[in-house]
Length: 457
Image 1 (cartoon, helix red, strand yellow):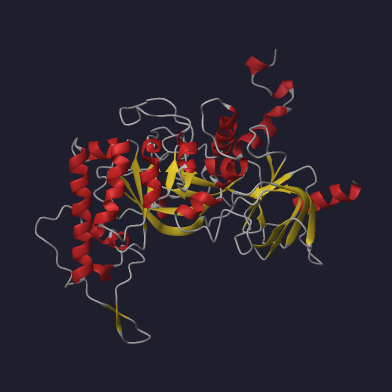
Image 2 (cartoon, rainbow, N blue to C red; image 1 turned 90 degrees about the vertical axis):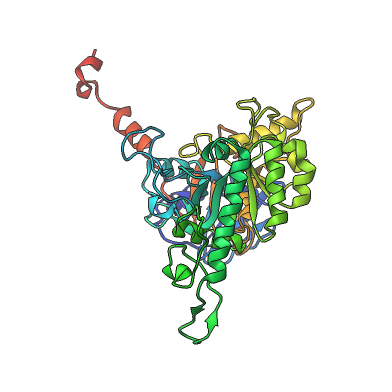
């Protein structure tokens, strides 16, 4: 026992640098849909997972962390968030950077707006959230801009993958942005992609300085001037700025994912139909509260869904068929579904996702309801959101080669009473203190004589 305590204390004192270590004797859940493994081992070297599971040999010379009585999982991946874009959900100046009313839409890039020191980042890190999809809000247009994947590490380099996806509203919100008509929103969408196609058609070929040969333009950053040079002609009746049209070129080419928010079943089917007209689009459905009513068609389309986990009220006319069984029924139909915090404290409470996942497991015991297995529920907040945007081989599970985002929990992570006791991101142990915990320590044992006058008696 003394050796075990000493090892844990040693780990707690480790510096903020990538470590090679092995976590042994814990209940290991890989996050790939499989069930937990009792007495498992996770081996990490140079920031990457080497092995995880039963009967895994511990390499000689690595630090050993005894997790007996604990649970070990990959870090939580926030499936749809605005983490890092706001400190508080109020309109105070400087508190919220989640949306823009400026002249640009699709060209907007969330990266410059993400603040790794925003208070909610540390709060969510302390509860096991290690990565998040950060999505901008729409402003005046159905296109919100380009989102990124971030980590929640205690450093100033939060960006894992910039400009990985574009976000567009095509449901109730999209209707409002398009003048009050869903039909208008779809026309705007198609027009925008056609304007992007014109840029792609007329853009001057870029020249590789190394090979000296003309090559197809590759838009890594939509603000690169080369994609709208002198030959990048456009039609007269344009609705997008050149920046916005250029930003949609990689979407049109299928090199950037397109997250589409739609809740109503008919809107969901409208999104599926877009694939017929634009087959290169890599669409991810967001929301899909009524998705269960057309689950077989979503499954046949192969489009993944990031769903609101437990919507069960007809909060709007596009959610009349809301039910807590939505995610379970989508999963049962074969849809690749994961969980996000869509319009649900998405700037602050990403850690709610593990409670939501636990609720989906509990639904299995409710007569007439459809839940999911424990393994599926964990995957929906770890590997599944990563797979939806093409990063399943990089984050979200404890498979060999993945980034070493690992959490040691006091108990079952899908139980709200469990807490993260150690969090590693890229193999680096993270601090778990927050603004709130520091306030608690400051005032918890304040002598009565130091209290303000009103509290001394």
